[in-house]
Image (cartoon, rainbow, N blue to C red; front, side):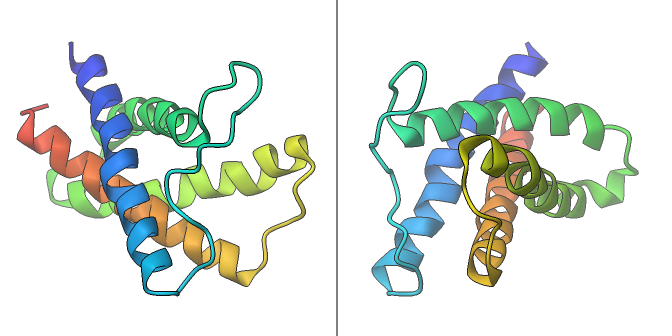
Length: 132
């Protein structure tokens, strides 16, 4: 049950925190990238934001297992820092090359770290609320 809670927390955090922050940044003109991209993804042709939320769930499952090993006082920092770094670095070094996307520029790096850090905070909040 705890793995399911972690997955759901990561999935929902993607929709609420990651995409919510992206919508706020886009709405204020700080990024041209819009939230809730509906372009179909390969191979299932799901909207991009649904695919992103699925992977947010997978990342939360992995991070929940990793964060358990940290001292209790490091819970929040671990979720924010690891949430910002790990998915971002994997995207830049693995996903981008596989999709033929050029290496990230400074704006993409900053945006990735900010959005994924917000995602990590959201997942941590949701897991705490679920008494994970």
